[in-house]
Length: 288
Ligand code: PAF
Image 1 (cartoon, rainbow, N blue to C red):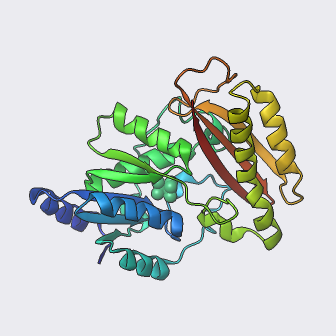
Image 2 (cartoon, rainbow, N blue to C red; image 1 turned 90 degrees about the vertical axis):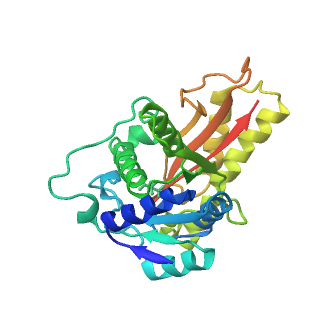
């Protein structure tokens, strides 16, 4: 496994791989890898000749009041995990390499970026889309794997590749969960033991909605479901604020007002909840 710090060296290597008709699978990450990331790497390995993982905490996707400087980092551990998974290259640039002083081009994906996370973190997806397009251009991958956990991010990236005719296939891999259902996330390390126990209620609330919808054959109204989910989450002392609980079309992210008369659409049920300073997101998709 080789660690690449420079864009020029990385492009030289990936261009040579492409000439040799190698399939390059790519997993973009911000490091502090956990089982969720490893599942993305495993998915990439299955379909590629060469796997590249990028590790870069992207300042552009954090607002000034967010946790960029505090975001957990442990490159030595990440390196070990990647080696154990059989990763071929880690692209590990520094900030100046990715954003030189005169950097001034940004990608905005409208509509799908606007709601849910976009409402609360207005610059976030502009930062994500910009770095992901840069990474695609650098690693020149055939496909890239993203996690369903960041459902809106997955929609934004898919739309960007579609709209800009980017020759990279986007694969979305299922969310990996702890035994009690909590979605794996690098931010889970910030949780106190009490918050950690309560955080499992996010998935319980999502599963409650799924069960109710199935049992009652899509006849329950969404306001009722949101109310019950909210009650369940608020029953936990450390859940300090629900930013949103939302039902959306899983592809367009348009808000869904009713489940009745839904034909083939699949519905994304997503939520964001704060446990003190720690903000967690999760989602499930239900298919009619
Ligand atoms: O999902 C993440 O870790 C990041 O948003 C990504 C895709 C690596 C871009 O910085």
